Length: 79
Image 1 (cartoon, rainbow, N blue to C red):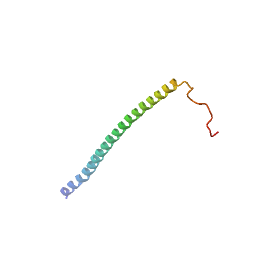
Image 2 (cartoon, rainbow, N blue to C red):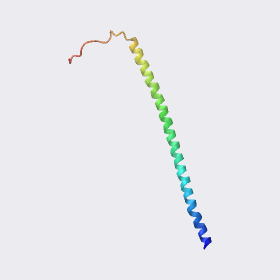
Image 3 (tube, rainbow, N blue to C red):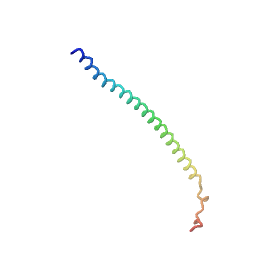
Image 4 (cartoon, one colour):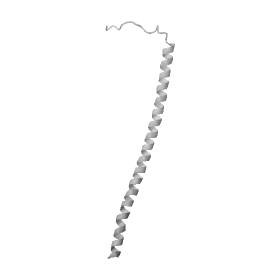
């Protein structure tokens, strides 16, 4: 009887180990995917920061070049 119980006692211990390995594999894949998304978002954020800075610089130049005489100081017709 003890010979029949030995294989049964090893089977349950192998199954949780396999389950852990499968979970670990999926977790590692998820971590890799999330890392990729974070890198993409960082690149997009850096690009947007540069774009905002460029736009700010363009607006600043336009304001500096403006004499102020170009803008009418009249009330709109709906007043």
